[in-house]
Amino acid sequence: MRGAALPPALLCVALGLGLASARGKTAVLGLAVLVVTASAITLAPVPVSWSDAVFLGCWMSIIASAAIVYAPRTLQDKAALALSLNAGVWTGALIAVAPSKVGLLAALPFSLCAWPAAWARRRGQAIGLEVIASWLIGVAVLAATLQFLPATPGYLPDHMD
Amino acid sequence: MTRRIAGMLREAPSAPRPGRFSAATALPIVFGAAAVTPAYAHSGTGLAGGFESGFSHPITGVDHLLAMVSVGIWGAFLGRPLLYALPVIFPLIMVGGAILGMFSLPMPPLELAIAASVLVLGLCVCLAIQAPAWVACAIVAIFAVFHGYAHGVELPSAADPFGYSVGFVLATGLLHALGISIGVLNALPNGILVTRSFGGAVAVAGAWYLARTLGL
Image (cartoon, rainbow over all chains, first blue to last red; front, side, top):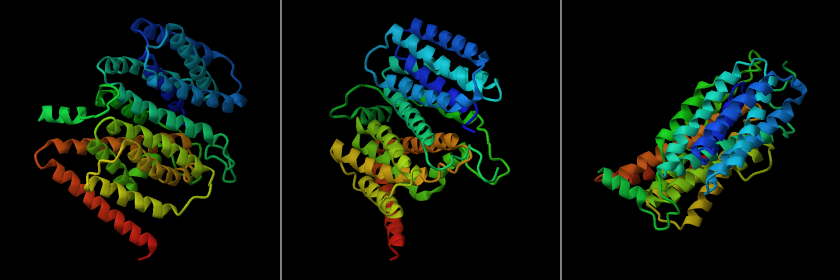
């Protein structure tokens, strides 16, 4: 197992931090895009055999979204919406391949961190966001690497199963 | 006192941008990550490891704990931008070390390097060494590789490796934040004496670890 609702939750957090760099209205629109896309993809018949690709997409999206925090400029509207669409696709796909759909309800609220993050950015406290973004990037890099590990990761069946 | 603390945080010869670490921004993430329950695919097989396991790994290992807290305190001595740069650099480089550990790539004696990190970082705090930015970053980065390696070797066998990763990265970051918080004592009367004494105690512990590792 790879953490149930934790990967989509972290993706939503990363997106929230990234959207904090966008204009207020764009951030709101981005969150709406996330919710709609994720909900739609969750209902789509995503084959469980795509799990590895879906998780890899999630890790890459976390890295991309968190990396936006380090951009000195305001996030362009189109880029913000593209980022939200991307996060929505992978969040929905993660939930679609999970045994339970309830994870979506647990994950999506984490994107609301965009508000305190934008507030912190406006007050010149972006450095705190950068620290958190570095944690997210670190975790995503580790998780992505795990998929290419020659040893059997703990979430796969082994001789004890 | 508030002004002195604010002054210390502003004290930066080459601060690239204004701002302070905001606990308000960190708390939702911290509590959020802790609130999401990780799943256990290997329940019943005896295979341990998830968020709790990863989170407790840097905290229950006293050598890890002392080194992480010392990084934060040293950052407080160095002022901005290193006050915040070190806690950003450390987890990112630590991940590189963890990847080396996950692939079990050969490394110099791990325990020796970790013991040395406790000694050196303790001395940096104790002596309040004002190292140039690149030297401080290099010291922290080198030790981060070894600490990451120690976490990484245990990661693949965890029942929930992702939860384990989140746990140990989060715990490491919080220990840095704790170190920075302790470093705020520098703004108080005799506060520097307290923090430097703490650094001295860490250095003594590091020397003890080193002696034990070398079998002295």
